[in-house]
Image (cartoon, rainbow, N blue to C red; front, side):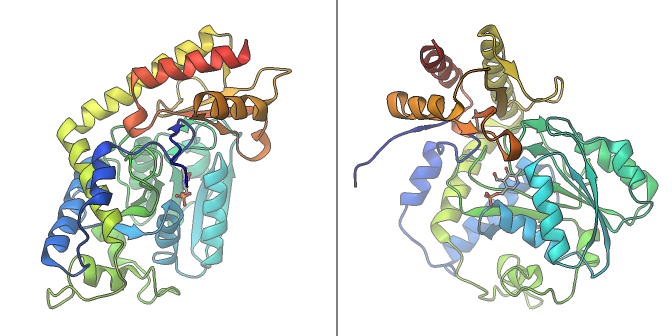
Length: 365
Ligand code: PLP
């Protein structure tokens, strides 16, 4: 098969960091090899740094970001629990679907797409829910919501409510401080700002959430109690086999995280901000309109309104065929009226911005 190279400037996957690619090619280790277990432990430590948490239970789950979402609900929803979900895009929608499958009484708080989560409305939706769930960076619209404010408001009102944050598109693309933000459960994906191929779902859970978990969830594969016996050791301290860990993917994540931690999260976040701001300024100079509400726009993912009279799919096709650049269409009802341009991980660089703007200008000319 021909080796085709693309610039992946859509909503993910992004082009991997060179360290992540090198990690994939390293000699394979067995999943119980002490060398591998040490690498897994270090991966957990690095995830804690990137996420701003001390949670002991911080680990990569086998599967893509949606596995993290499943694990967050299946391990913590007790049948009949009231779960408030802030819906301001596709992934909030998905949370409602997943939570309801595990027996939650879902209370939806719908927002217009393109707007951030309205904390007052989330609080007003239920006086004492078991959980509140929200997406930090809504990839479907390019909007950031204020998880810090949400966490503070919830903690002040009722200590018992758990906060779940979807960090699939925010992890390693901006500063996150889960512990300071009072987030109890968070999950992510590897294929966006972590700059690793798709295949793992970083996951973290606080001690207080752990205490209220479902003892025997309706899943075997995603039972965090069983997985924990392998990742962090069981009661006897031993590492019991649960399922065969995808060792090459863990090596890739480990090495990408090493690079991110070496660069430092503040510098990584600043790089994403600089690239995102340059892209958004350049697009507006071209006369294009941005879709997400001003003041709440992600730097790592920019949503653009497709101009009147322009065929969205034709432009994307031309970018791909003539320039090797992939950008995304919109999600849901905005499939043909919005483009999504990602500058994630290794692509959060000014040279990528210039390349995309140059190509887009030619295609739209
Ligand atoms: N949540 C958000 C915010 C996402 O952007 C995505 C994927 O794009 C997911 C969840 C689901 O992740 P995956 O497609 O890796 O299963």
